[in-house]
Length: 48
Image (tube, rainbow, N blue to C red):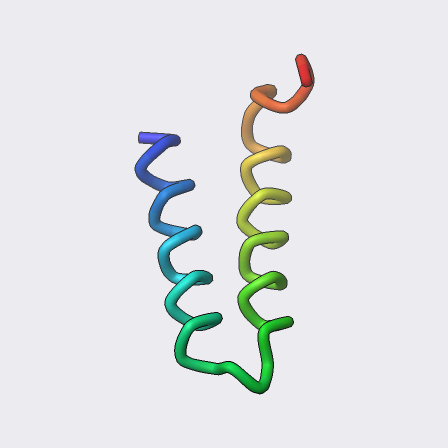
């Protein structure tokens, strides 16, 4: 479930980045929000 969620967030961000060449910061913001939500909800990144 977590892998599917992460993959979904990544795909949405990648599609936004592809279709908005003038504003690639939007895609990075989506990725950062997704990672921060995963960090808050799990301890996956505590070991890294």
